[in-house]
Length: 553
Image (tube, rainbow, N blue to C red; front, top):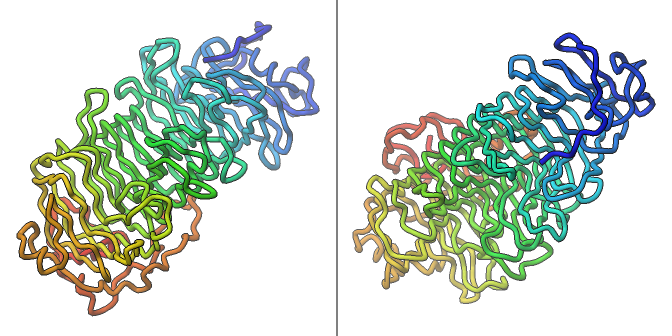
């Protein structure tokens, strides 16, 4: 995965923590040890042998062409306690414009360099480079630790045109190496970056991608990033942010929007996704406009947040998804890499006008199988008033969509205290169903959900459609269900939040549109859920009994 280091120099030993300088006006014959003795080229940087804990400064406001490679050859000793750093110096960001090509090329490669840090640098795809940053471990069975990519702007990277490889992203995190050495990584932090393409339909993408070998990428934090304009290739899987083979991760306080514009296949893109991963927490993110552009032609997915195949012991909470072509929340419950999906939880999320293209069939989808480990869905607010009568795909989305098979959900599964407000008129003049469960999946506990909508097409359960709330209640499938206008402060007016991801505040308190007004039938009519986290979407303490919906406190 690395380019060859040419002309490796035997340099005199320098003290740990030595700083080296690179300037567009420098000279590769210089020592590099001061701004006045700066080097000039990336080739020189690659060819030097660095003492442990070195710091390389690229002059801010200047552009450097090439691809940086750091590995055991030029960083023979590394440790997370004495990081090896690449920073911009002076005013502004240094720009690194990549010039390397190939399926596994990257503008910056850090291969088995513990403590590697990239901070405040701009990376631009200069041609057909696959990745902006590549973090990997091709040489050691001991985990490479302490990796950080922070405060950087990385744009334009993706699978090169004509390549048969799926390799390519703004940041690649790889535990499953193409040289057949599956080296582990640990303590990976990706913080406060801008990961993007040049326009909504740019072919760049994903934002963060890669693969683990089993669960050999551990202790990951993805926080404060703005991820956008990643149109991707037409037949693409992936996401704005992806966890793959991760064990223990927090993905929080990120904004992800305008993802998957060019995708025309099913098994398409998501805003945030996990796959064959464990103990993933996805919270306090805003995800919107994961969608085809300029219009829907073919394909599916485009969901906001997806716990995909083989995801276990994971949590999706306090997120705001809106205006996505597919579901706001997706539970893709398949077994993958021998990992049985679940137990997983979705709670205190707000979804507004998701699945506008009916690209998934529901605001929350549980597909393709009944979950074999417990699935909990509680305290969420789902709202849509999209006119779906003219969409290229037929029909209207349901609030909850289960398919495409029969089956019994695992013991402990529950759907409680959620609000479904459906005003998404279809060609028939009717709004979407509250449940679409035509194959009769059973076993989950349904309780204290609030439903509302004008001219809804009811509740589809197996071969029976219950057209009215009275008929649904009489069927005995749910206890203490509630019907009525939840009296949101401003339904449909959630909009796009104004907040800065690096601030670490999440989208809360936006959107205020889904707080409950006095007199709401959702107030105090929920049922307690064990281990409920204690706080609702608006960071309010949850009483006993709770309110129904994301404004539970």
